[in-house]
Image (cartoon, rainbow over all chains, first blue to last red):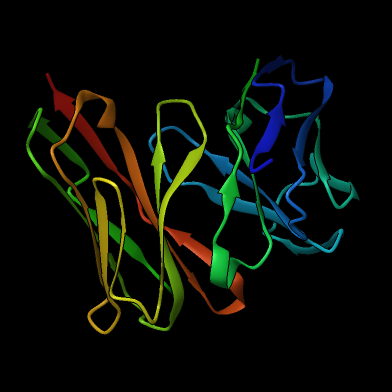
Length: 113
Length: 111
């Protein structure tokens, strides 16, 4: 299995809802990432987990809460989002980015209404 | 701070023509450079990964070159097809394992 799987593919949520995005990989990669991508812009890093520990938080608002329950799974919990949080959320993983680069998932298209 | 620029921002070519996509970066102290393809509303598909010690990588119709000293990489796609229409992103990996993306080149290949 050489894929990063993200669910759901699409999500519409109200500003008072709580929802979660899920990311899964079975490649044995020890680092996992959340990126946010707005239309016609490059992806922006949000969080990095290394060996199941949060190693980087790029000053992301607390309404986004990441969780890494095990080495294969990464969640992003969403609460009280704003319409401007609507974007494509991408998950990525890597074993050794210096030698093997990154593998990205297909993303979750989030719309906040 | 590393900055990555991709020129042109958009490109339209007739089918069969070769594509040349450019990527430049400001800090040559990189570990590697990765080219990705992104279809509208979809995730990123890795095309080629070039290590800082390498000059080029090839996969099928794709060839990517790297000139680290001048801070440039070029992605060549031979004999373009309508299915090559997508956005192409380059990203460089530098100290702290920080991945910096360029703004992308939107490619349209007309039948």
